[in-house]
Image (cartoon, rainbow, N blue to C red):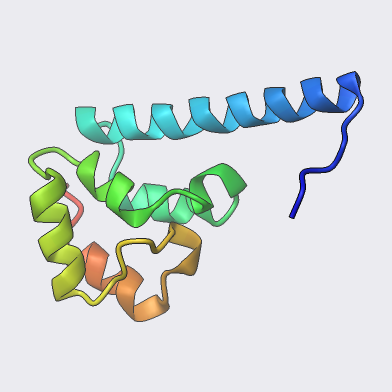
Length: 106
């Protein structure tokens, strides 16, 4: 499927939108790594943010403190979450299983 031809203004707008989405995802990952945000907050925020909803679950898990690619992959296998699954595609049971695996600290 070929990409549509965009005029320069449409192209600039699309590039700006993509840049904003990348910045939002990077900020959430930084916040998770620093412990400023919890997984529950990210999952809730994804309901209202298209950029967050399109993040891969593995990306979010790897951004958590003390979770690397191997631990994230093992957890996703255990919870039967596909490697390619995005936050938006999580079912209610999968979402709850993730929240149970990473309880929110008081």
